[in-house]
Length: 330
View 1 (cartoon, one colour):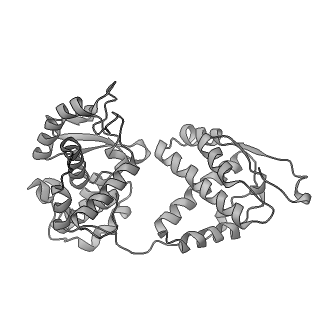
View 2 (spheres, rainbow, N blue to C red):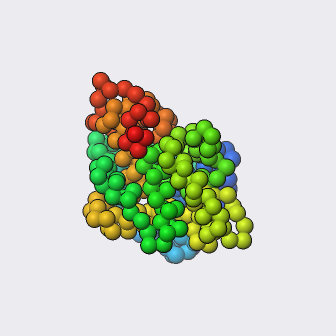
View 3 (spheres, helix red, strand yellow):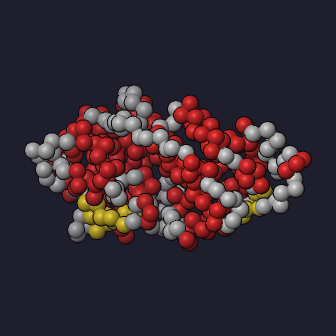
């Protein structure tokens, strides 16, 4: 519950049903589930910040979290009073917390979308983010692993043979395809064409793309399928290629924690995540001579400007395609 100033109570209370906003993101904008979830987290993080920094606008943090997760109604009357300086303060807090410019921009995009929805519903008169000059992206390079470090990950085997096989396949797919973690955990056995040696993945914005798989990895996946059926399938088969021991699809959090633990086990001290292997894919291709346009297609980037962050290793004299340059294809 919000507690408002006495002179502010006269304003007609407005209540936003977050379910309607979620439906708007899904139906009107056609956004994918992961994007909608990210936008909701953006709203949550801002509401909690606004609550903690704004006098006479008190909210129970636990309640707002549960409301967001359960899509319940929340009294958002105080949002009428939000100004650009509140957003700027939130940006400063994110920067102080060590968030990258890219993350800050993405969160601002999610929050701005929320205010645009409030405008559409005539609950506010202006989007406070419109008057803010967005920070520019800096030219920092993503963290990536050397060939030797990637080999350490590829050669790691879990004590549990079945889980070890499953995990080694995930590492191989990450590094040889440049998939996002959300794309990898969404792969179903029916998405793999063993005759053509390709896998169909669904990327951001529910966009579909085809990724090639080299022969050895394709064979390893075929050898894994009977083990998947015998060791990982429980009551029913949901079709996902990679399952946990209960027969459910894996989560991004599990894979993030697992890769962290593997890095510790093999002596890699870099602060990496599943996305690091995507950076490795692009960086190692460029260092081998692949052209930027080809890498853009494999990564599923809508704009080549997103791919250009890797051009620090590009060699204009060497142009070719994935099969010729990726070390795992040789």
